[in-house]
Image (cartoon, rainbow, N blue to C red; front, top):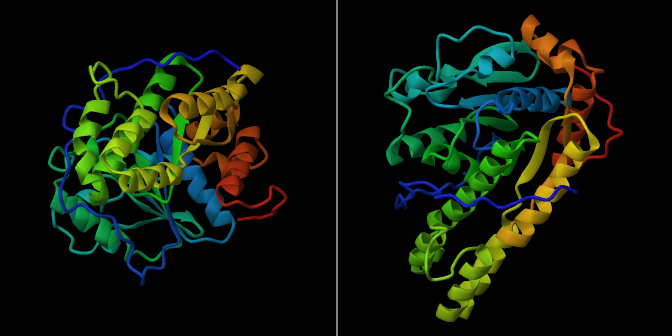
Length: 334
């Protein structure tokens, strides 16, 4: 395994608690799960992976809506080979449409629909607490089995919050130093954001603020340190914190692997996250660098449909099965 070095950096400047922001799934929703694809860095293949995960789920018979949550820089429609739809998230956020379902577009792929992002709209890049809650509430009313969120680059609150509220979160990285560093930073942001969104941990918010500063003088640098300080305050609260840490199980994808060392990187990142952050990553698999991906993009056709036997397509479907806890011998067709 590669030797990995933890590079500390300030997390985000406006990492504040929006009181009352909760993500509760209504009992009447059809939606089984929400999947998010993030990673903190641009150009790592999030949109490509999100679109192909949607298609892979559809091939298993599920109805899927892919949602482009890269507010201000949407391009998920391109991964499906279609033009920018006339109706987008911007129409709902800016209240030109009252129902989110009216902004959904067809992709010409059975069981897959698209909710395109708010491309180039400066008015919707930074959602308010009220706007975010309205969007989430309307998402639960959509007619689908799975929602796939394609998240933007960076660690802004929109990106972090949508990842934090997802049932399954995929962290994507490339086998290169900048991508690895951003993936670590992204995971730390999501983890501490989850704690700040949980009213149970309001008493330890000061500790969370401290641990987010890698240069703090109190020696609170990791989730383990946070647990130690919480235990001093309350053993009951510490137990709840321990249980919450155990529930945080993001899934890791290493994209564009060319060598065995690239593939092994996923195991190294998993080990480092457990050692330094006490975060239990699940490495669901690598995605092999495949020239057929480039050809499919040029053709404006999803690689999973254009080249279903390509190595990338096989890897992607294995990742889908792993995420669903299904065996790899499943056979499906679109």
